[in-house]
Image (cartoon, rainbow, N blue to C red; front, side, top):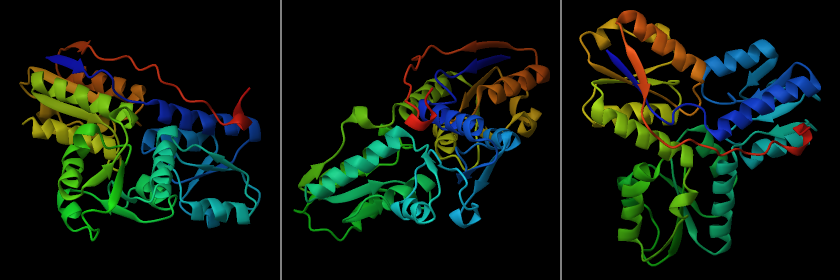
Amino acid sequence: MKIILAQPRGFCAGVVRAIDIVDRALAKYGAPVYVRHEIVHNRHVVESLKAKGARFVEDLDEVPEGAVTIFSAHGVSRKVENEAKSRSLPTIDATCPLVTKVHNQGRRYIAQGRAVIFIGHAGHPEVEGTLGQIDGELHLVENEDDVERLSIPVDAPIAYITQTTLSVDDTRGVIAALHRRFSDVAGPEIRDICYATQNRQTAARELSRIADVLIVVGARNSSNSNRLREIGEEAGLPSYLVANSSEIDTEWVRNVRIVGVTAGASAPEIVVDDVVQTLMQIAPSEVSALDGPIETVSFRLPAELMG
């Protein structure tokens, strides 16, 4: 059996930064530090940080007075920011800089007098945070049907922004629908779309052309991991999303020639390695990786954690 790894896969720069922020906050301030929502959508990462003294909460009511509080990589609404200020909680913002960039784009479009169409998945933490960061006329759409239901005059100036865990490919149809319906449409340049999401999806498509089965390492609540599994399914492959090696079913790879393995942007390489080792125990295997871009992007840490 051949095991072929996608390139790139796993951690993106925003995830690396967010995890580093929690680690450095623990080192500087001591345990516990409190994190609103999972810092990233991966159980292995969350449990590892819990073991070091991080405490994960969904509401700031759960944070004791004066405790160091970290906002997750997905970002939070201004309401949450203001609640933290009103309680004088010392906060550290681990929001991915590319998510912050989307917030700033939306505000600029509002300032230009445009209605903003936000392409994203309702209920996702990044979407909830973004909706709560932009004041003005903002509409959430998930698909082309939602575009048709918008109650905006066709000659009104509009602009669109997108959830960062959606790629250029994911949003192409919705953007085309906006251009068909409205006469004055503005949007970010393609290079402003999250590089990591696009790179991982492109690699998954390439892998799906040669593999017989696709295994995606990632969490059930990870939007980008679920999308990688869907890409395999769209290519006609049996495709499975696993949190770790214990979820692998030997029947998936019985008499299979090539197993493709990739990982969502919040999945650590140590879990990918464990998945590969488990597959090698099921059947004698040789392991290789696809050619693909080597990502060199890195994001600065907050000033209070530098040095």
